[in-house]
Image (cartoon, helix red, strand yellow):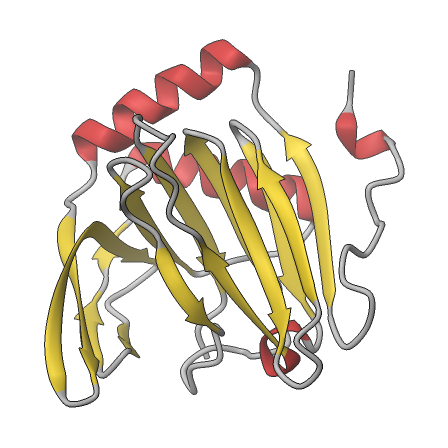
Length: 199
């Protein structure tokens, strides 16, 4: 079954942005194979952020890969990108072919279990093309991905399945925050790839 031949252009946001959820784009065997490779072959480092002037080091780990050495600053921390490895190039090419667009970078997150999440934020750093697509590809544990409108407080929640592709674009980062809430019920890891377009 080709999910991309179905009508997956439904916008999950009620207004002021566009989020399309395509569901899984890999079969279970492919998903498990890539999950193992991502856990083993990515150069993971603990994430750091400056919050109210205090430097916080998270249990959640991150990695930053790109076409060339880009500096990416978020939460007052600057990272220098690594060059794509083979697994990431394969996944980038897959996502690009499905969406018929190009990405030049990818921020990866590793949540070891449900005790790790990420707070409300927008991907609106100056180094990003704010209205360009951000493609999110998920591996491992299924987690809720929640949006909240910055002015109205309206919320939209989407359960991200194994190997599922979600795309944010348009005015989404300007008008909406998003989060991965913590959940004590989740005992297994999740790896998330967010393919981006650096300016």
